[in-house]
Image 1 (tube, rainbow, N blue to C red):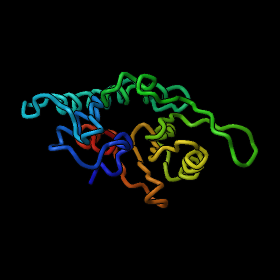
Image 2 (cartoon, rainbow, N blue to C red):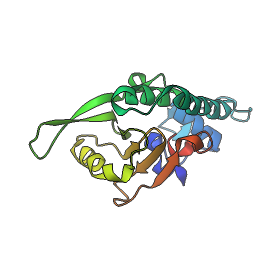
Image 3 (cartoon, rainbow, N blue to C red):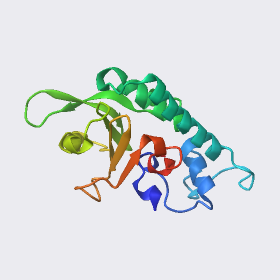
Image 4 (tube, rainbow, N blue to C red):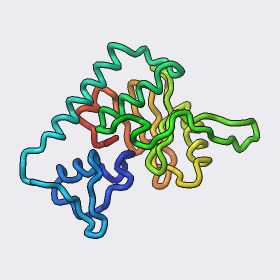
Length: 193
């Protein structure tokens, strides 16, 4: 199931949702009665506009990236992450409770490194410049994940502004559990949402 490896679905209860729309509402709105284990959504049978709105917002993100960003890691990663969070229905990175440029102490005693985005316990996002071969940065992302204790994020996302590689190191170490091109995000939002 897609929800088993989605970075932004890390706290999604495994049961109690009667429809995918109900799951999506939980993700975007976060309204769940944990005692009963099911979503509390009014008028579940009404036509749901949030799914349509999500696809539109993600399509806008794709166009915005194409029109306004060159894919420079140092100057644009934070902008991109904030826009991504907004497109996914959050107020922004900070409003969702994530931290940009989180300090990560290096094990090799060479000082401190900085993870581009840490959203404990959900995900860590490490950005690279556009066109970068993400496979060359696996070790860096894995090391950040290892050092991100307590409340280590379940998922790690490597992103080069055009691709997302999603890792779940608890279940699979050697390869991403999913890969997604930015242009496909509006139609495959389940990978990140």
